[in-house]
Length: 494
Ligand code: ADP
Image (cartoon, rainbow, N blue to C red; front, side, top):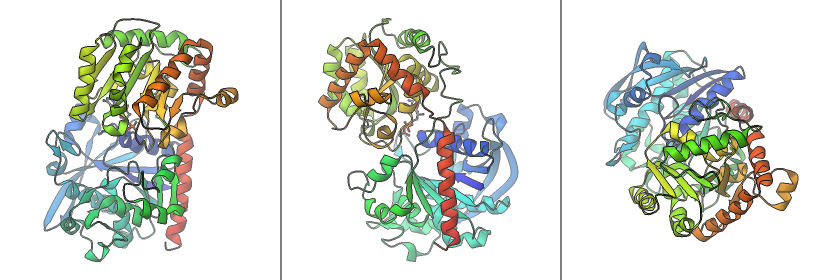
């Protein structure tokens, strides 16, 4: 198949979260299966510089001009490849929109012109297909930033020779909807007739996530459980009705992990490489290195908890802070890496200050340290309020770091709780709970520590996690099925 994937972030060009990982790992896996792929994403010069990418990005000598509201806005089109693949990447270089410190905002908050910035990106996708004569079978858009793409394709696709191209839209997080005041409708360039409660309008505002959901031929989200959850009021963020009306076209596909990047047997960031046969030799070396790096006392037998996350209430940081006193009374160590909500960051830092022998916190984004935490910790904490897919629990499983998770979304689909029955079947690989309460999390922590002392069972849990196939191969095949369904629907005039 010929597939164009578009997204507002993609590794190694930019990243704020899991979306960036998916946006490059999925095309890579699909290309490896023999399909023809293109990726379209913004060029954020400040990120490219940080990631040392200057040499890998070239000009195409082409530019596009798009009318946004009353202005004609021009962008240069740069090109690159997803490293190690033949996947061609088009980078939309529009400095006024994208030459900024952050992708979506800075210390002052979200950028106020993000609707305009990503309407531009969405329109650029069609322009680039036209300019470079790409006639894909499907265009795969992701999250609210490219939610306009399915609408543009359906309404204006014929003007770009894309009348036969189907659209597929993936929801990575219902919490971010790209909701703007109604006058931003003018920026989209689409007729006001689409601004109605069935299509682009939501409570009087323009909603780009809803737009994508309404217009795409097929919808996916990043885990089977999340696909069910978002059709309920609790997880649907107001769009559950819209999703329920499209449930026939919605599938949940668990993300994979990029095994070239997240593999303890070859990971260049960690102190000692290991696999499931050498985990009990390699992991202790990584644990000591982590304790040293984080300034914690080196104790082999003290259970070490790790957490890497955006610091937001989504990730259950409030649960952890809520039981931190009890946690501090135990003979354990915890390391946290993340950035986000200043109030929660302060809470974590205060904890580290009060108990420097037990808690270590690094505020910031640190790729190398994130690998060292995955390899060096015994137990990974991920008690999310909601979790569309979650990657860190899968990295943990692949690294023999037993996760404690809340059984929601992709966490429920990847972590199999330690019960007698699951241990008997050999499927148990971690600990999960449901009730969103600090005391329930704390009880899980105590339960986990009981198993930690039982070395034979613990090793079994580690090996079960490490030997399951977490690769993109499996998910890529499921995406192909969804693409084929989208094409069928398109050809039947959906
Ligand atoms: P989300 O996309 O909701 O943030 P995911 O678990 O799906 O959560 O993906 C998060 C990704 O970002 C993972 O690859 C994780 O390792 C990475 N990450 C998050 N915070 C940091 C950080 N502070 N430093 C390094 N990597 C981080």
